[in-house]
Length: 123
Image (cartoon, rainbow, N blue to C red; front, side, top):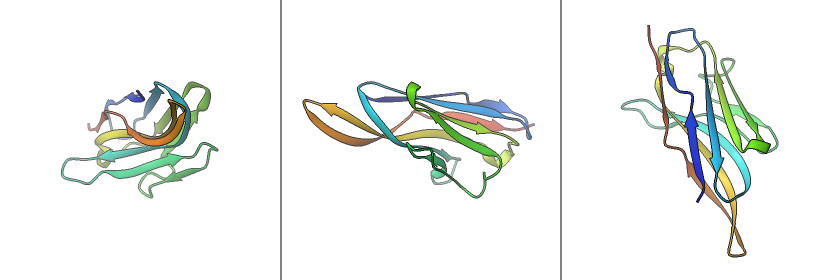
């Protein structure tokens, strides 16, 4: 069973930094696009950043120049480096990945989510 486990969230002052990690495990054959989403209270879940298996990246306008998404394919782990954090970055951050699995001789690609990690930016 594929699992995505996020870590690295917490409380940070405005202007500070955090690094989120997303470790994938469990019967993985291949990981395609990895992404980070966030959801603040009362808001819809929104895409923050994504990275393809080849390393192409995409960012929400609100985080461009401040956040950097990366991945270590050998470790099946994705990262989100968040710098110059603002109070409006406060949200639960979720990892998402398209994962290929081989089960009973059949290959399929499914979408998986982590449980979320809280990021709070406040003085």
